[in-house]
Length: 158
Image 1 (cartoon, rainbow, N blue to C red):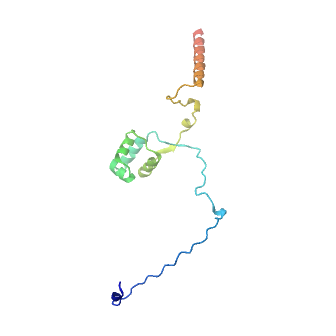
Image 2 (image 1 turned 90 degrees about the horizontal axis):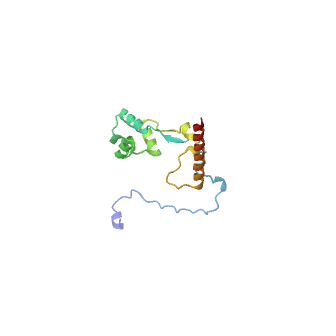
Image 3 (image 1 turned 90 degrees about the vertical axis):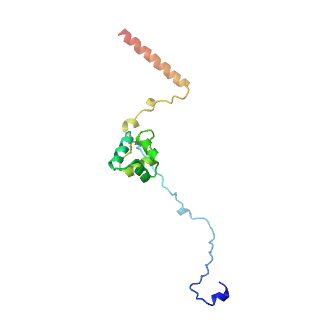
């Protein structure tokens, strides 16, 4: 307000001058306070995997709670089409979505890996088809052929 107008009214509040911030000199930080934010975690011995019948578990739990795809989608903040694809097994949920579904439907989808699958020796695991044969692969094939011929000749003699 101008000085002329300020004579006619009352002062209801006055602004206090703000104190200026005092800058502290920066020095080296004490090394005793330096710590990592997240403690190092030991690797988990058990690996987790998605349940094989996840689609039926999700559908049965949703129907048991009386939820439609649309209602479940709103609860999870996910698209209805995504939920339908998961229930028809056209798509598998990632870990985040699986945990959301577990909490919303009160079911278990992420389980510890079964011992049978975890103990498969590396030699029994299928090799990728899209790579070319190496010299080592050819040697293994030759050895397998020789064993097969020996087995066949033993059978013929018996």
